[in-house]
Amino acid sequence: DLDLVAALAGGRHVLDVHADPDHNRSVVTLAAASPDVLIDELTAQVATAVERIDLASHAGVHPRVGAADVVPIVPLGEVTMAEAVNAAHRLGERLWRELGLPVFFYGEAGGGRRLVEIRRRSLAPDLGGPRLHPRAGAVCVGARPPLVAYNIAFDELPPAVVGRLVRQMRELPGVHALAFPLTGGRLQLSMNLTRPEEAGPAAAFEAAQRVTGLEGSAELVGLCPVGAAAGPGCDGGLLEARLAATAAGWAAERARRLGGEEHLRLADRLEAEARSLRALDASQQAILGGAERAAALVRIQQPAGIAEPETTTFLRTAATGFREAVRQVAGATVQERVHLLDRWLANG
Image (cartoon, rainbow, N blue to C red):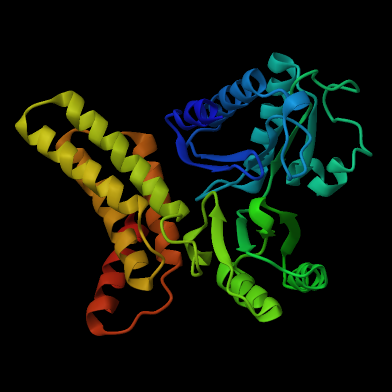
């Protein structure tokens, strides 16, 4: 439903929308500096899904418990897991109270409960139930660290190879793997990389290639923390780059509203910077440049009269995330750039 995808993508805090026709499933990534704003935005997104999706007529290969299905809260920057758990519980209460959706809590918000346990339908909802919503089922609301959703599609694999592939991928640290049939006889290896610092996209892709003897086609679902982003299919999907791009877009809107020749020129430059950041690749040079660009965007706001707290929070979170992912510091010029960046981050 392209209209539904467009409706989901229209939110101010939406960083990314990934739609998959085979799964008949969309992944929407949002971010906000305030838990209240995030809860409001997520409630609105879930309400749209409840209004537009009827599970009775829905078909797709991915397991699901409801129209909105899974809503994880992921702490970024200085946000703690305890704060994410609190936000997840508050969100769950609103979804039950306002939309009549029974809620399962999972991850840190559910005492470590896993989604697979909920999808087996052996548990009662934490809020609401036992009857499900007549059209939209239930929803799983959780709190968890960042993970990477990563798919690899193959044109054709014998059943014996498929079974071996899934088993061996699950031996990698933190890798949850399933195999799904796709249209045209293709097969998709669908993975959640829950410890991407140990087994990220590059390691997963190499392992799948080693087992199958085939390269496959890699696809990032949603966004990837820049520290784990080295690997096929990840360029243009960096979480920190989208945070910085979104902030640059907001700053451009404010500059354009102020009007005048200088502010309009600044708005044009900020919009171009937002487009460039969205497409950023995961090379070390690009990552260091991303940190510097996010830091520079913070500094230009105040003199231009367009500073705003949430924009600054996004940019600082992006700059810090980029900096933590800079691993190769070679050459005097690069070392000086890193030193200046570290001084700026330390001084806040």
